[in-house]
Image (cartoon, rainbow, N blue to C red):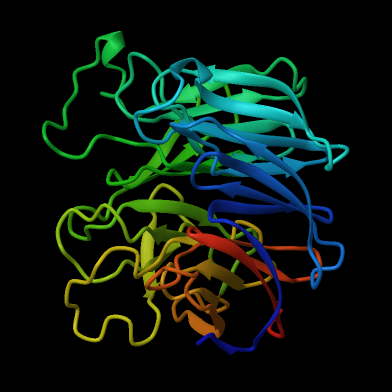
Length: 375
């Protein structure tokens, strides 16, 4: 049965499961996990009675499980999902006009080779993406200028030296996990980049044509979970610059207890220092290995103050206050019922709207709409 602390369930969107939820104005954008479901747009002006406006499908063998939107422009990823389906559909980033959200219209598509684009950030002009390309091993960082959405222009790229084997770089990692840029996030003239089992990087993008690494740290293989998201906090906390780093509870290098989130002090950004961690209370009582997708997945990339909503896979929504970054504290949670036919919930992503209402998507089925008293 669903349980909660300082939260109240007020609505639900019955839809295929997904990888991401995002909000622009009164529109909820849902990126779905499995074809043929691609993207759904939902009117949430009344969050207790959400109304589906439009859906965009994708062909077999591809998915568009990530979505970002701002000021009437929506961008969705196209990425390989399985081995079947039309190869000519192509991986990349599709750009839509959603000024009329009931009738989204594709403007253009940035084409990549290989698997396509995984996750990304978007600030209304630039997209910071994680594509694959011929000649590169694994995903890397690319910056696209979308000032003219009909004609996206690459302005910069960055990779770990050794990824560009097509350019003659020697691949140094042997049998270790392939480098994979998972997710760049911009704040100011920095990109905070998760790189899976190769850790995290902070890039200086004051010159976007020449991103430059200024810090690198990797918790693997000592901790076997991949680095999923590096989320900088805009304001100082206890006088320090802080970054929240979520490890994803999948692709473990060896059997292990569930993943958790790290809190880093990046006041000296050239030397990120882990100062605390947080795990759902009682989830890891003895450190014994557990199945994947029990632990941490993704913090909300939109938040206010010091309270970060997390999608914690089988543990639902967790509201974590990092006002004291040396001692994170849970101030609320919502534990949803498992979707029909599933053994447990699989909370995959979370975001909030301008009213402080929380939207939590399950990767199997559905979006829960949740009020909280903690914001």
